Length: 489
Image 1: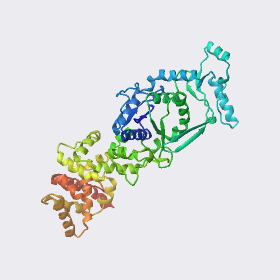
Image 2: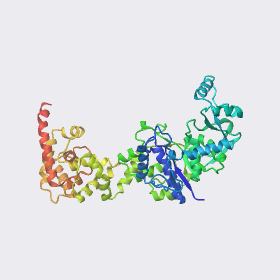
Image 3: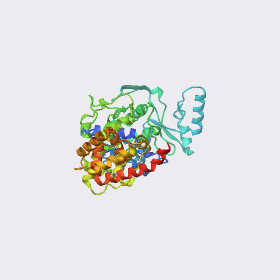
Image 4: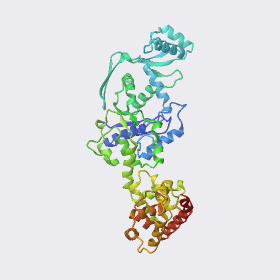
């Protein structure tokens, strides 16, 4: 059997984290077995679907590196892959089910059904359709048809248990008596999700349906439809939901949920794929950092946990930082180009210097966006002093003296490299009878305007003698403006 799986998003929004994880699980399963991964867009909600959202979903999948073997912009033997273009197939299936006695026309008005539901709720009972239209006589039905009465189509749920062996949760069974005769075709001729998804899965020979836990309640209905259509049902695997750290379903209140937002926020697709794969699935052992190839090799439905997964942004940041640390300087520079451009920063044409700068910043970066602010002091002529840095290291009476000492000893340092500069500064501190840290803190603020930075001696070497002297001059001029204030204090 050739494995055929599908990801079937509804384009009522961009590709969110939960959908991306579901797509990834399907893709990994197909690639592991040498099967086929199908992308099918369920766009029958005309009011909320849009071409913009479809494009956004495709963009999100491509960013993650999830390619599809059949689907939009690719084609395939079971086209079309937009559900809105398959309505005739769904309507034909509904007609077939009516003719075979597995479904029937329901002429009940929306008002009647609403009133019945409200009465049941007021009585504290669960409402279930009472099969009024199933009990119509042939003459009554013919009269309604002759009058052109609008009607929906309901599936006639048989008695007995509906059983299936979920690949994640194990055996599940539901009593048919608890399932009402559900609508499969609305009175306007639009199929419901239950009918369209089953018909499309049957037409496309889907062998395994891997989807979210929130669909478990739909599966008994879908199994009944498959059997009524004379089609062998696929194997089902329902994956756990993704929760925020407050253990509530992941939503906007937890931060970004759209995959494209994570791309803009500076996450690497390889890191995102690695992170998403481990949300509710384990390869066994304590492996965490895994390449795409390793994920494909290890992936199995049996590794999916039945419990809900927690989206931990700190874990994602850590993992992203691990991937950033492994990037070659030239690849990192290419990835950062649009971020620098958006921030109005020009790294210049000195590729070697840029590589050295990125190499200094790389160990501290968790997202690509981290490089922008960290690199700013190296790419702008003037330094802006952060209030905290000024308060801690420039407000002391000795700050001007330390700045003068630094300018004097660094002016003649030769060679102007990290090792030499460290020796010069430490010796100057000893000669002045102060701690080396006192000079180092002032040097850091002078060069970056901040309390933290990469190793200060590497920073000095990277900036070069001319820029170091200019920044010490800027610091001394700045400190001179603070002298009257100090005097008054």
